[in-house]
Amino acid sequence: MSTLLETIPRKRRDRRLKGDRAVELDSSDGGNGSKEPFDVGVDAESDAIAPSVNESPWSIDRREELLNKHPVVTGKYTVPTPMLRRAHEEARDRVWTRRTGVVFFGETRAGKTTCAMSIRDFLRDEFKDIYITMESCRASERPSPGLMCRLILEGSNHVLSSREKHDKLLDNVIIDVFTNVSNLGGDQYVLILDEVNLGNERDFIELLQIHNILFLKGIRMTTISFGQPDILNRINSLQATNQPQIIARFFRKPIPFQSCDSEVILADVLRCLAEDTEWPEGSGWTYTYFFFPRAFRGGFRLVKYAAQIWSALLNVSPTRKGEFTMETIAITINGLYLGNYMRDAHEFELSNDEIAAALDAADL
Image (spheres, rainbow, N blue to C red):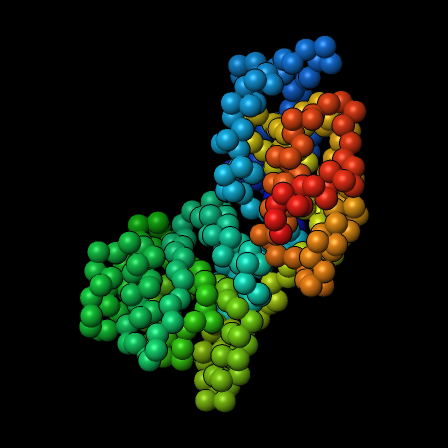
């Protein structure tokens, strides 16, 4: 993932995607915080790829052996969009300042759940003394007392999450959160709530009750939510039923979760894949470098083809009107990498026909 623009002053760090998690490299400790790969030379007359760090020599055959485990092949990676970075910044700022009330809303397959999971891992990495859980709301045909408590307990794999009585479930939630917060030596609990649009007024009243009880016990609770656009209808409904405390606590700041809706955003994603990703961990290989080591050395970057790729996307999906989900972008990237990596050469270039073929194979 590209380096996050941090709202709280702190020592500058570079952030890279390793597999399906975002991790930090401290650029001040010689940890190769630069945007170029380690000096992994590719001799024009040899297939040998030998890292300058203390690792076994690499070869093209070794790369082929690792191919099936690559995050692009397994699908276990996060497309580093500007929206993802903005969500990370907003979540970090909310946790740091102990505020709540932010909700991200967007269309299905826009990448909200992936973003929520990424934020969960990111916050756990940075805030070691904060207890953080993630749950996904469930719809119920009628108000179900204790549903929110049950979801929170399920999120921590609590053995008593199946209890029927609401008061017992509430007691278990408070005890569980208090215990985990104390064990971490902190005084803050962060709840990341996905599919929040499926919740009803009763669920949010219950969540408000949990907030208030924890506050009286000296624990600050921050809720970060993700949902479909119809959460805006839920907010309007809460306003109509005079529930300002629920809106203030959970929905004070609705933020649209944008898809990839411009060539500029696509170019930013493609640039990141060549600069700020890494796999295998410790190799210094960005994703583009892994699939095209010789071409990369010759100056090949997918971002150079952003205009052609964007035009091809518009041609194959005219009904989307220039708005593509993160799933679509990931499938496109997969097609470009996997459809062409065998042609890696120092002078490799992508033609419009090859871009079209990759999108056709991706079956968008």
